[in-house]
Amino acid sequence: MSPKILTDQERQLQKNRLIGEGKKLLFSYGIRKTSVADITKAAGMAKGTFYQHFTSKEELFLEIVTQLHVTWFQQAELYFSEPSSEPLGERVRSFIRFCFHANEFISIFKYHNEIEELIMEMQASSNQAVIDLMDLEHAAYERLLKMFNIDTNKTKPGVVYNYFHAMYFGIANKSMMDPDCFDETFEAMLNGLIVYIFGGIS
Image (cartoon, one colour):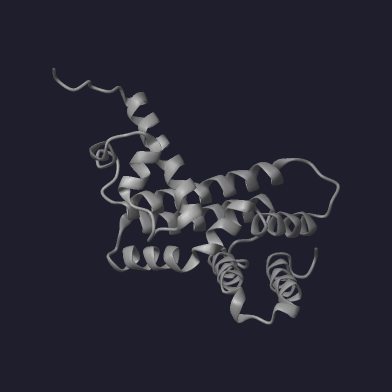
């Protein structure tokens, strides 16, 4: 009997299931302790099915990281498109706080070194998916700044991009910081970003 030919929708469902189970394993065990066999077992699929969608577990995990970014930016655009009497600067401040304390962010922080290593290795090989992720982030920050009616020639999306990554690396390396001043340090960094975007008007 010849193997069943799947429809595009069925193939996408397979891929989504691999991504979903892969994300659970990534958040629970990290990249190094998760194998392709672990992912396919959790998804209830044969190992060969995995390679019909991804060339490696690293490619899958980069796809997960990319999807997380897409979700966060979609949530941001939806949140800031809704009317509010709260000053915009304070809304941005509150949203960033929410993101950095969200469960998915906290889960990623646990395996920051592994994720950073993955992205740097793929970036060194000029991996297109890493380039696409960076382009996605820059484009999203530019869209958000324009939603705020900010002049992106003066307030550069690239600086906002760098600021967020600096904050992320700081939190991910929390063990190197003075724990008694950590929250105050985060707020100081956040305030610096708000000042850069809004010129001190929050």
